[in-house]
Image (cartoon, rainbow, N blue to C red; front, side, top):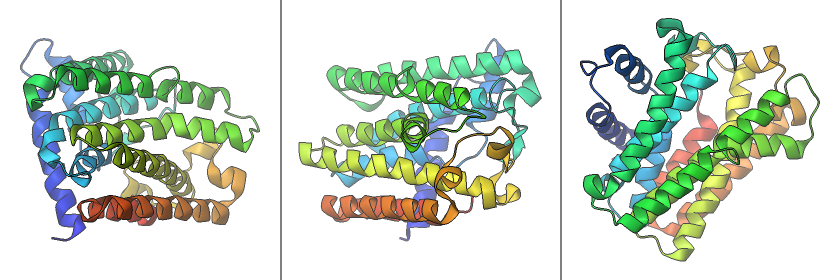
Length: 296
């Protein structure tokens, strides 16, 4: 089976799990649950979820053992996208080729839908012993790692520094801080969580962590590049927004060609770590290459 077919299989599993775990649109308050499902089930690559499942598989576990965990990751990611698109943040009109949540449901409902998805994600994590047979100790460890990844010293902290940096010249260290936390920390938590569910040995977990750091950076650099040279129809969102908001980006700080080279270096490290993990991790190597070559 080629890697695209395997990707499709894993995405379908995640879609099905999300449809089950999210409250139905018929449950009160219906409009809130409709807004939550609109954004979470509205397409997307499911990359973080797929990485979590693939990390579990890559260290010798079964991808499906990490399925509920992967669904929680996607709920968290969807919450960040809803809030990121708000007028107070990036003020985007389109996401995944459709109008953003606040354009359909209004700003207040979008804020609440994001809040509810964040809460639902941690509820799912707390129920992992019930859903996936994990030990209470492991479930608690995953909750702590994800809370750290998404809190003021992680994803939200990166978003804050990103907002405060708009229209300002910043150094490379600050740029790396923003992207490591705003984008990289959730990739790290997804991959490390999947590996831990797969009972990774310490050296395997170290390899997965190194892979995750470089994957997250490669993804963000490529995202910055696509905002400059990408096709809005393929991306499903507006391009040129970083320049409009005067955001610091890798092409802006290093230049387009140097940024491309940096992304390639990160992907090379990812593939080295996948080789270390062995044949079970071939799909992780393929995913890293996909990040470098993606146009959407």
